Length: 202
Ligand SMILES: [Zn+2]
Image (cartoon, rainbow, N blue to C red):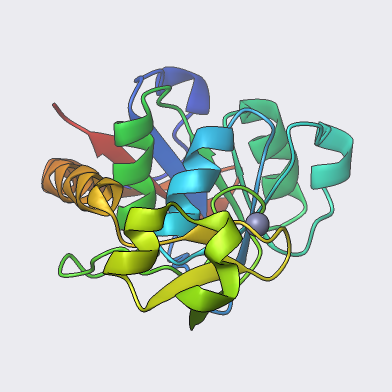
């Protein structure tokens, strides 16, 4: 369906996202820049293997001219980026599971996906697999006995391993993918530009 000239003000549904351009998909080479209201989403997208730049101190002015894809909850920022033809995603939902679901749908990440340790959830640095014996001072004894290798952040030095929390993360992703089945996708036109509107209907 195509709805030309729809006004954004009429779309005050809580659980929707709008992406510009309409066919915007997120590839491995893309960087997402998240506004200061989306810290939790930044962590989850890093777990999904997407490269995310985030700071709680970003100001709108800094984000208007960024070349990368900006993800925001701020409608005004979205409209300003739209008017200068910059790639942008507006996420309306305040619920993290729903935000994640809308972003997974936008990124077109495969449902069979299981979180891989690729980026540090804290700082966004790249993770590298290392021998657990190199970081014995940073892991509990039971972890050093159970795992031969763990992952270390090349930026901040935080160490990760596939513990029980990893299973909980996987369950969270499965819940988000289940919500994706209830998303309606509509191409709309805002200020003469083609955007993709996603509405979560449950
Ligand atoms: Zn880090």
